[in-house]
Length: 404
Length: 168
Image (cartoon, rainbow over all chains, first blue to last red; front, side, top):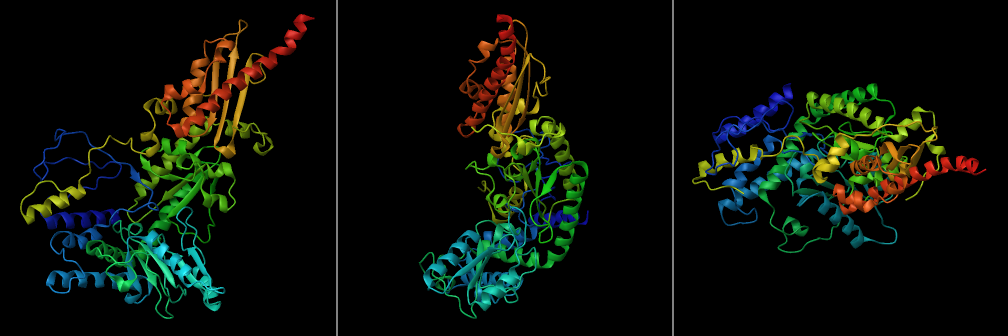
């Protein structure tokens, strides 16, 4: 696989630079993590010839993504030697950190067609969302309102018609904010073509580090923002606090890599998504895909397996990291509000599983996940009274269920 | 997090090695549901003893169907009772998460060999305690108790016309 070779090369490049042997990735099917004698002085508890340790396959990229090795490469110098505060004006440490910060700002801006002066670094998309909404409350007048829409939904992968919404907002002189955490670097975005006034960006959704994000704030026409946190006036007074150079360098590198890889990633992920869906739907009846298939980001696949409950399926697929819209998996015991909003039947909402396909997902992982899924859905359907009733020709909607 | 290492070069090597080396973890048993549940729940889930169906039309079989798909919990529990009033066989089918499957499986194990009256005494708290269910999942054990009672009630109902005939 070209991509796996690229991943291995990237990983080797990072470790080779540091002087140790090439390390094998620790995630996957037949790969082993062999515990060689560690470089550090600490002795490990287990014997060096311990059994191979396999971690689950990662199919939950909507929750978070692994760091791209190229991003780590970019960040490391700023975690080790170049540790200056980017706002220190009086010495080289500060100057080199500031230069790195501005380079990162340019990288983020060019991914979305913005001017670097319109990018403010934050701690993540959540903070960016809060700044954007608070901005509304500060500027609110009787005839002003804000439209805030997710670009790509994190649960079902549906793409909203951003350009159209932007056009409508612009003609009505209404601010338009979009939370693009799941979209940046995955689908082409341009803040000017789409008439976006505010945009939230998240680092760890695009193979960058956690704890960093950005907010795009339009300058022409100027969008006024009220700061959430006050202090030393950094980031043009819109977000005080020392900008964490290693993190923003990581975010910038992630954006640059995303810009380069976007087309290739999209094509590859689309193929893998088709493969997964085809395999599953060919072998299993009564599988529903949640979300409009026409306006859909391929890497986020949400399937409902009728007559099988989501959490029981997750428990069966214990060597694959997945997520579900079932009530049993949420702390609040409420099923997914997104599925409810699109009108999914409640029992199908409880049967939903989200498969995330990302830059580093391999065909092998997709095949394995599909096979296990098919195997366990069949087993769980044998255990399901609902499946039995449907096989006997009973219409489930005609039954009066007991409440408890 | 970085362990003791002297010198910038060694620091850099250790940092890379550390970041790319995975910690010791048990093989494969890593998904949250499997990890959060007690081993007994996982056992019942992976090796359920009494999955299946009995003949619903038989006079000696009581069927209990409780729960609702909209609540993501549906249990069907069936018992087969002999002439002496002892439960000789039990089967279940469940639509629900691990902590719904395990109580219903355990319920079928517990009712076997008990008389109808003894089976009525099975409480959800006993089931929950046996499986070490977390507080948030206690309602699933309640449903299992309901399922047992529903099956017993159905069996009793089936016996009534016969009693009436015998009294005549």
